[in-house]
Image 1 (tube, helix red, strand yellow):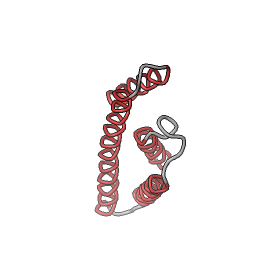
Image 2 (image 1 turned 135 degrees about the vertical axis):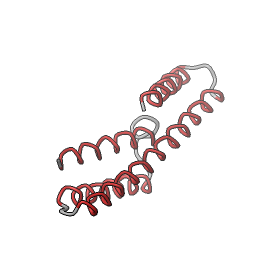
Image 3 (image 1 turned 60 degrees about the vertical axis):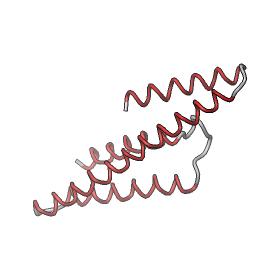
Amino acid sequence: QLLEKVQTILELMMFLLISLGWKFLKPTLHLNEVRFAIGISVISFYLGVFEVVCTAQSTCSGYQLSRYILHSGVYLVVIVAMNFNLQMVYTQIAEAPASLESGKLYRKHQAYKIFRWIF
């Protein structure tokens, strides 16, 4: 059951890091983005552990609700970051002259649109 919680956290982090543009639009994340991702991971992991080891149904429900609210907030951040980066790539395409670099921007734009559709 704990492995299921860890898998959910890793899935959430994958969506978050891709939406922030890590290794796709920029080679490294800003320090605040790294702190946010680590903080969310740690909080979600602790809530998952507490949910697995709890004994009373009312406290289990509280941990589960807290974890769902946290993940819903992160999914909202993913949507906003994804749309922001998609708009940034589109702006770069509009301002770029026709070159090989423009072709790379078109591929990034298309990949982000596919990611948005999958998400």
